[in-house]
Image 1 (cartoon, rainbow, N blue to C red):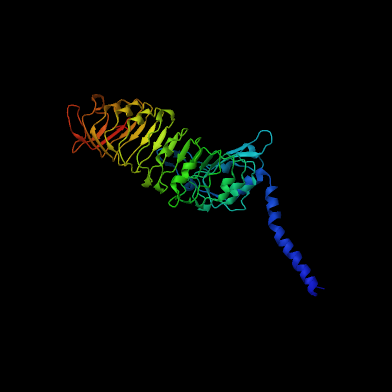
Image 2 (cartoon, one colour):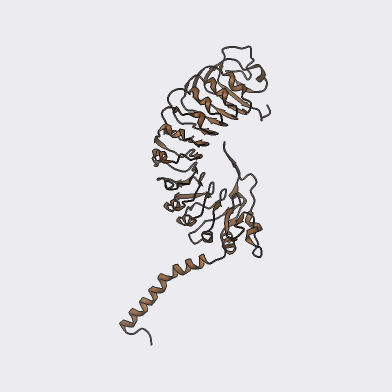
Amino acid sequence: MGCLGWKYQLFCLVVLLSLLFHLPSSFSSSLSSISPCSALLHFNSSLSLHRSASLSFYTSRIQMCDNSYPKTASWKEDKDCCGWDGVVCDQTTRHVIGLDLSCSWLSGSIHSNSTLFSLPHLRTLNLAGNDFNYSLILSEFGNFKSLTHLNLSSSTFSGKIPYEISHLSSLVSLDLSYNYGLLIETPVWKNLTQLRELLLDWSNMSSFRPNSLMNLSSSFTTLSLHGCNLQGKLQNNFLCLPNIQTLDLGGNWNLDLGSLPKCNWSSISLKFLDLSEIRFSGELLDSIGNMKSLKHLNLYYCNLIGSIPMSLGNLTKLTTLDLSYNSFRGLLPWSLFNLPNLSSLYLDNNQLVGPLPNHLVGNVAVEVIGSTLLPPMFQNISVTFVLLNKSRPL
């Protein structure tokens, strides 16, 4: 008979609108009811496998995807997913609580209706070293309320970090580094009171206010913001966080730290410090020799002047030291050559004078104004380049 009367037409319209508005919630309900194993299979099927998605690369701090392989290729529908490669389940509840698909050749986009987001019990999620085709970091990542570790590094994500990340109140470690299209304008992590590790290397923080970092918890152990185009003034006592072990602000040539702070370095367990290409004013203080835990120190191109402190010879755990491209003057400090664990030393492009110790001649590559080796009997010769690398055959 049809909807002939206007009242009946109105009734039909109300029914139709009701169905339309309830469709998303019913769809969401169906996602939440999907089994974890099915969710993982659907997530995997939404992506492709390409070896080129997980190319290996190295930095001074990490090696990634050296031994990449497609973890999900071994997943079988007739097997319990708790035994799948990269999947960790709670032994009691059988909930999927961990997913490590780092360097797994995954290629494609992650959409808001991805079944990845129907794993509400996840505590650790590692998708590093894949190619997600400049996908946005979606607000749905904020639904993993139990998450303690989130690693999306080097996976071709882009856009802004969604505010919903601040809902991850249990988060201890957040690594979004090496996503070159990632834009960070505000500290969305400021309410994450449990956060101890923050890595955002090579993201775009050009419009970020550096002093927003001053609110970091004193419990922070890792902060890595290398090459983020940070600009402006940052109070230098920021470097004195008491529990910091890894601090990398290198490659931010428009960041102003003034002079190196007078911290109580002996009470700080810093192991990795990179302040390369940040312009300082003044000398390198003797107190830097109190960083007894330090293994890596990079002060390349920092506009430092004066002499190289002899106290650096106290850093017996040091493996890498880069003081190149500064304005250091005076005698070449022999104490550096007696460091027992030092494997790489860079002093090029300074105004240093003096001979090499006897035990180094023939074991170190040296370039000195037209000469390749500096015999110990020569005095007062200006050293322009010194590279010590015990692991490299000469």
